[in-house]
Image 1 (cartoon, rainbow over the protein chains, first blue to last red):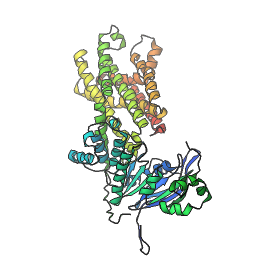
Image 2 (image 1 turned 120 degrees about the horizontal axis):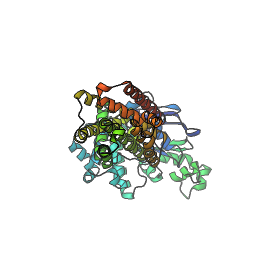
Image 3 (image 1 turned 60 degrees about the horizontal axis):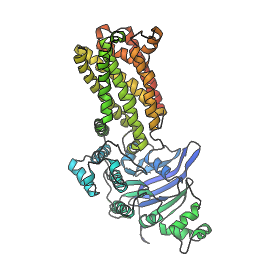
Length: 263
Length: 259
């Protein structure tokens, strides 16, 4: 981020305007607008069913929005979905690959789908880089949860996209696997890639994201840096009611979205 | 944020590159799937041997019809059991959703899968025709072989259409598999009697114009081009209509995800 007095001109990696997504009569996304700058990690936080995955699905081209616009870099995703998809890498919340293919073959397939030509040696190097060199001949279902997430992230970034979308990338991982994955995500950030991720972990959001947005019932409630969100909402009575001592990002989250359980 | 950001160069993939990658992967998966290989080659050969050894073979239509019935069964097995099972399973697992977030147009995902199925059917046809030459002493002239392969492609559209309709109308993997097996009776087994009046002429007529019966008539006609008749043309037309109707239903109601 720019320091005081500097004029920062950020190019946008993603621009979403007034996005509406419905499933039948159910409105999943209700007028969401957000912008992600180049080189920024942007976290989308929300309880289950808040509209996080639906927002991501619309950006990824998996669901057709009722209205609104999505631009990936300078490409209108509605008008040119193929070009938009070529500019983003995606890790879905639950991913699976063809069960009869080995990891090496899966990498070769997805490289081909993104127009990346890789020799067998290069594929081996990529797998070794994510500590999966020994697993190259295994099937995806034979890998542990952490290894599967590493394969998914490798494939999401195999074409070196400017924008990476990660839907709950660390869900279900043990602390070691989670730390490794965050290291990889931070490496992407360090080379200037933009990342939009969803997570239920406030600690992670606070530690890694430049900015976070809280979404609930399809609407974006607030957007700012983690520290900015705390500062902005620390005196909100709903937040004060759930805070124990110093206000945290989790207090802000629960204060704004409510304490009741969501399915 | 990073100040040393270097914008990556984006080279959109070519359509031929996408199709090549998908086809290579789908073919590898098909070759590695033992169940698919078994379904491709074993049942039609077994049926061919069974029919050739049966006492009532003349009543079913003779050696050419035996070969046509074996081919019909093989095509139907690959399409209705093999294709539907793999599509239903991959949809359940989320494989299609993963493919759909790539730049690959959705039609390329299905075209690649269908191409692999048609290739399997052509391979099965070659094996059955070789077996027919050995077992039934049925040999064809080159034109008849080529016409048979061409009509196998037309016939594949009928049963791949049926398979597409099944996965279009049913989401659950188990239900798709169960209904696929059940649908064999009216769609394929019924056609076995399209050239036989064992159960009376009404049953023969129904059997002849069932999907399996139409395909068997078409294939037996293709194997004897000199005897290609008005009935063969009607069978061709019926096959095309079946393919259009079933594929239309399958495409109209197909969903890429079960969630």
